[in-house]
Amino acid sequence: KYSSENLPSGPRKKLGEKLFESGNLSSLLEAMAIVSANHNGAPLSQVAVNWCRAKGTIPIPGARSLKQAKQNLESLDWNISNEEMALLDAASAKVPAYIDSSASPFPKKDTNTGLVMFDS
Image 1 (cartoon, helix red, strand yellow):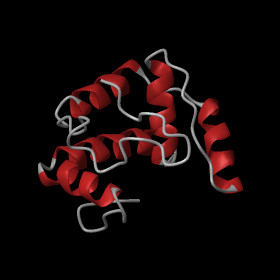
Image 2 (cartoon, one colour):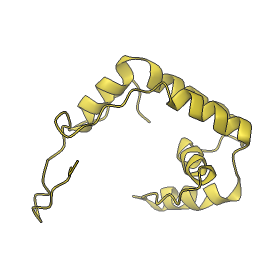
Image 3 (cartoon, rainbow, N blue to C red):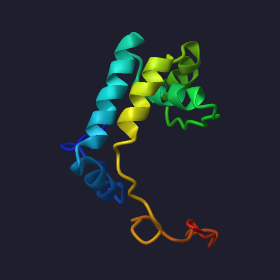
Image 4 (cartoon, rainbow, N blue to C red):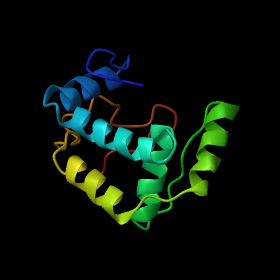
């Protein structure tokens, strides 16, 4: 959905600019597109969910529409292979870390509860 030419708006724009400037995020998205093509053009969100599942985590994807909820559910219909996981792992290892509490464009405290958003 986003690219170096189509950045998100709001505070996520700065994150997008930083992540896309090296070109490594584009390489990760290309690797995800390869996995997608291997699975009948599955949405990249399904690739991400399956990658998390393959790593032994329990992803909790959000959904803002019925279409997204269905896509999330359909991600359980297939699994990535070990080769695909290695491809994604190699591509993601090149994406630089960006967020630390001093550089984040997001609020340091929740505006409603006052809870600290970054504690380390």
